[in-house]
Length: 242
Image 1: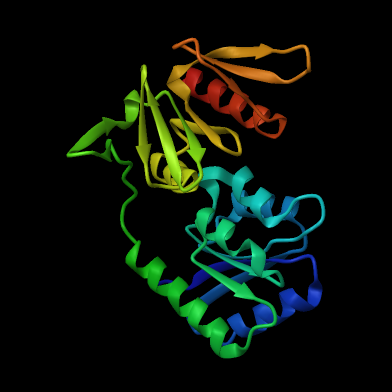
Image 2: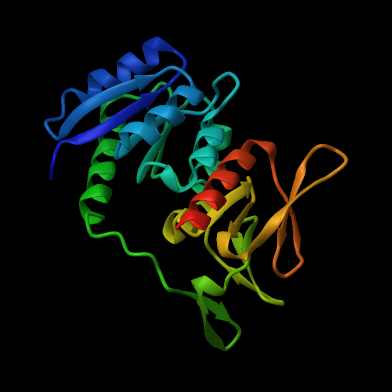
């Protein structure tokens, strides 16, 4: 396996130094970059596309979960959260984290996390292929839903709701997993709990509150967070230009 490119994100310098020092002991690690804020991390990840991310959770202005949500399908394939707070563990795994390192951790615990990360990356080295269909388990049957037929998807706890025409199918997958698998070429996040099929978007409508709603061809109206508006408009422009 080629040397791994790693990004370490933490607003505390000593914490970044500790992780990078441990990483440099491993011969499989190549370039190691550091960021001291979530905003800087988003920019660095989109530019350099590291394979492995060690990410703090509590940071000013833009925390670790914000980073993952804002990146969408641009998120690195393997993410290890590093934090001093144990109450975020469940949410971290729901967000697609491979591991959760609780500060302070010893060298052995870090090495176990790093080994798991390397194994995950080694097993995932294959040409990227988007799923054409999703398998949905229903009472007494299996349903095959064409990805292209999905209008939008929203999160419902541990599940995701696939909205297809007038039907809704429940899938035991996280929104983060589906967003990564389906790809941002066709599906874009508009809210922390909603992603939409670009081909189903009819337009955007400005509300009196100053927020926009995404209007689908089905006439469904979906709330959109301001932080995702620019990204959606860029993707709609790109898709129309192709």
